Image 1 (cartoon, rainbow, N blue to C red):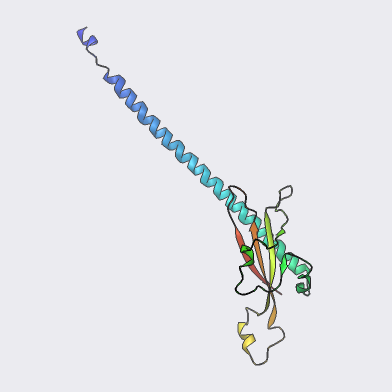
Image 2 (spheres, helix red, strand yellow):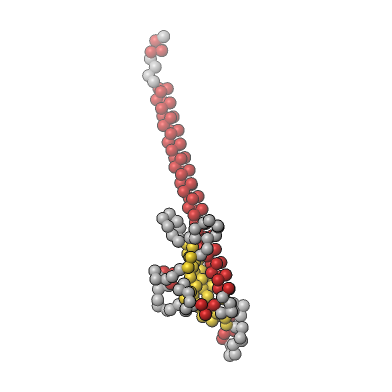
Length: 170
């Protein structure tokens, strides 16, 4: 019975140390899970913004195609449809005075979160035959009106910035 009174509490100290280690591992695991959850949410928001901007580009391309035979006649009528860009001037997508057109939402019931504008870039040769413009006699189908469409998402707190451009020619 004398051994019974000689215990110094070593089991209690070891149990508390094991409990501390398990708690630290659990907290570290929870922090990793929270970080992964945030990364997944950011990836989701970015992908949604990319899809909205791509839908805005498609909407603008459809608008240009609907203005055939010559969309350039609409330049004075639309404040978001611009003539040739000027050299040594800030790019229109960086200029706060640029007028953007709201794109339709990609899903019914969803608010529109993308915008676009269109610029006329002049007459450019076909990508199929880019040297046609350097010939002595330029063929009638060599040059055609070319447009640059710029689209962006509407940035709010916590959403990524997405800006895309496409070239569209008749």
